[in-house]
Image (cartoon, rainbow, N blue to C red; front, side, top):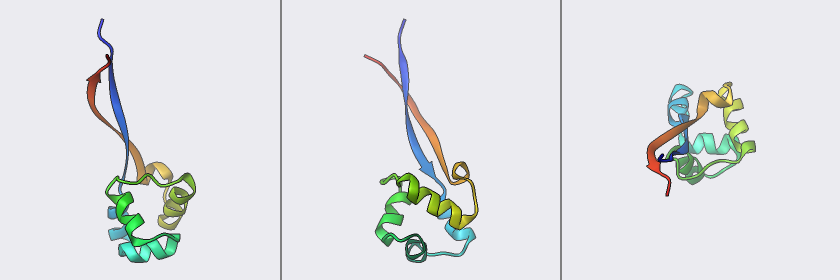
Length: 80
């Protein structure tokens, strides 16, 4: 019997929320106390924000965490 597993990645829709709220990366960064580069990295899924930072973001957008951040599974890999 083969064992398969999937990789799970944290994704977000911050770019969409910024557009809805008419915010640039710089403006969002200033409101949550980080650099524009940090916002860019989070949006590009290259940086996973701390729980505290995630809460700052969702509170600003007046949403629940799961409305902004969510898991996405990658294709299944065979366990060796």
